[in-house]
Structure formats: C-alpha cells, structure tokens
Image (cartoon, rainbow, N blue to C red; front, side):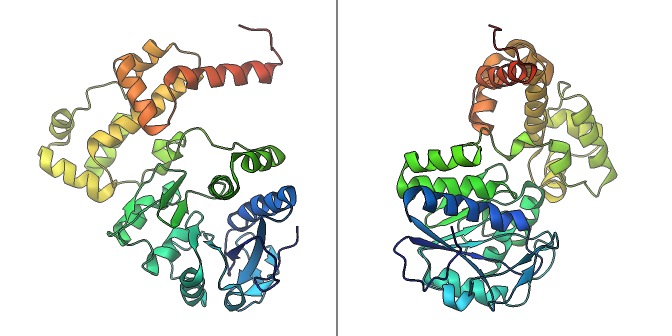
Length: 337
C-alpha cells in the first residue's frame, strides 16, 4: 500500500505520521504497517501519509533515511495525526520544525495520537494539559514532573482521553494503531490485521510486565537507594511504611516525600509493583497461585488476584496457564494436561 499525500483525493481515513530528524524508526513504521495492512485488507479504509516538517527526507535514530510523501502543511486536514517518539525527545527540545508542524497537524485533525516519547511533543504544545496520558515507562516520571497538568499513567499500553490517544514505548504503536482500526472499522478488520502481522490484537498486561528495577529511576539519596535494594532483594519482608521509615531513620511523612521526589510514586505502590513482579516470576516458573502469593509478599490468593486484575488485567490462574501453555508449545509437547 503506497504512502500517499493527503491531497490524493482518496476516500479512506487519512493518517498523517510526522517523521523528523532523529525519530525512532519503529515508532514510525509500525503504525504505518498496521494502517497500510488495514487499507489493503479492506479495500482502502485508510490512507497512510508519511510527512516531515518541510517535506524533505529525514534520518532516523538508527540511521535509516525516510522519504516522505508530503510536508506537514500538505498533510493538514488528515483524519488522524500521529507523532512518533525519539530517544532524545524527553531531555532535549523538539527538533527544528516539529513544534510548528505539530501545531498545524493537530489543529486540523479529528484525532491526535502519539507513540512512545512523542507524548513529549504533544505535551510541549499544551495538547495533553488536563488529560490522562502515557509514554515509555522509562520516561513516564520525567513527563509527569515536567508537565504537572498531565495525569500520567505509567503502566498503560495506551491511553485514550477524548480525541487524544497516547501510547507506551516503541512497539506499543502497533497496539494503538490496532485499537484505532477496531474503533473505526470493527473488530473483524482489526483481528485480520493482527493475524496478518502475527501480533496480539490486545496485548496481555501493561508496561509493568517489564522489570521494576530497570524502569525505576535510581534515587539520588543513599538511604533511598539502600531501601529500594532491600525491597527488590526480599519482596516478602516487612515493607510497611512505618517499618521502612524506621529502617531509613526518617519519619513516615519524610519517606513518602522522598519516594515522590526520587521515584515518582508512593512507597506502597513501589512495594506492590515489586511484589507483583515477583509473583509473575513465580507463576511463570510453575509455582501454584497460593505459593506465589505467599512468597511474593502479596499474602493471600485474593490479594494476589486483585493486584493482577488491577495492574495486568488477567487473573493469576490465567497468567500461569498462559506460560504453562507456552512452555508446552516450545517443547513440542501438546499432549500435557
């Protein structure tokens, strides 16, 4: 499916994806692949448009050159506008031409979306103020600190708030694009596209399926670093707020403030995320639900179930069964009960 200009006159929903210098390649190409496949399977439901601020080629973060079909000005009036992310976007100003292009494209689109750190470009334009949003788990705390008017949901794969949709890191652009296809054209076409691309139509779990330790900013204070290491090393220990405050030698109120400043969450939320990850690992290894609840520190089966449903959207039993099935498939054993 060709990536056409917004002025080509086709009847499908036009989707303008804005590429720019240093953009992440998969942030651009993954959604385009979804919409191109949907267009092919449906006979023209979508018209993907690859554009750049000035219509000139750009070099991605991986060194691949992208040849656009249009400039941002030519792509104005598209049904959907999508801004991909870039590795440097959270800590550097948006590349030249991007702010103006975002303003123009978003101002004329019926639906505004971002992939990964593209949320930072929308935030800088004020398009996320007063809204819920997400971004790559590594940069969620940075987005929340830099733009306090945004309610950042760090665990979501994608977030919809009205006509604005934001998605998590990199491959989450596929999830977001599939969700839009399902909304526009129904579950049947979205399912066909997912099958063609060999991806989940609805990915199980959120960003919390990735390591808590790897996605948590390293605290500046020694006392907090030591405390986090203790929690990660032994999730089932006593990590109540009073117990942690006593070990750190600070008041409960001060510890809560330190967590907010350095970790971007509450002590209780961090402890639960570590325990949830521990429970996932135990279930993946074949532990029964009751044992996983006890050894992870979550306690009872019911506490484990509530945590799984709240954060992952599945029950512990269903999660365990998924990995048991995967293990049989990987070993070629399809006869096990």
